[in-house]
Length: 416
Picture 1 (cartoon, one colour):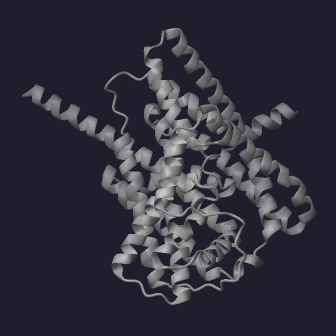
Picture 2 (picture 1 turned 180 degrees about the vertical axis):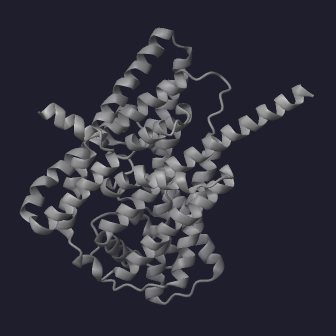
Picture 3 (picture 1 turned 180 degrees about the horizontal axis):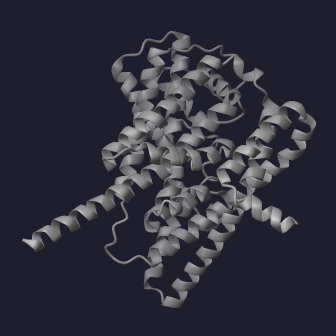
């Protein structure tokens, strides 16, 4: 009986299962709040499992890909990094422009969290540099993906000179970890059921109403980036309709990221989606974990919008050049957000410093950010994570089209 039931459930698409889990989570939160607090453990276990397996997955997949890679193979990484930076800067610029068109003021009464923000861009970059050379075992234990990425590249390149037995062992271990990840992902409907039930029952909607205008601006900017700016960037890259790819990434990556609120936890999901899209594993095994650390369009939006909300609250005049500088600072800061405890919110004081806003006031803005974080952080992570796959796929598609065109031109020349 259970076997037939499991077989029947397996035939239903994972996205539909997740939607069922979402609806059930909302119903439990609204009508059985006591039960919601108990099923919250399901969500915690799901996110914990993803976070636990993601560092190991990144390490072995990159090592496996690089160890078996032939010399001179094109991986499109330069193109992908360019798209990451362009996408993040575009998001920051849109957020700045929207903040002037739709200025929002705050009641700065929120308590600042007991945390210390970075002093500036130099400290952010220093933190990133130190993350690169962190002990690989410690990097795995703490989820430091910059360190994991750097050491996996070193080990992968070194394995090129190893014997075939060692390479096959790494490839086999990568397959084992990948299978374990697929098993964890199949539990997503149950995990999201627990996450949604806990989130709604714990926070409710009332706490967000007072910051409705700010949330409209933040989420509106993120939606505009996801549905307008990113498609334009992808169209310029692949020269064809980008929306089927955009919607696929939002549906199969963004939904997970929205509820897990963790780019790190979404790395296995994105890896699986890239495989489903038949992308080059030599490319996505590196670009996806890299994107989870530097492709932060949502973080750039958060930094720019909340910083300018403080500016509008205090009545500080801003010229166009300072606004442009803020876009650049938000871009660089967003790329380093994952290396700072607390993510994008803790980089707001750094951006506020451009306008002479003191740390006490800036930290009150951070406190506001934590209040609306239920929705803000979810939308931010969904944009960040889905864009990792989007830009990786765009670069891969563009590369294939270029190769097909070159082969076609060569064939034409041979005919003549």
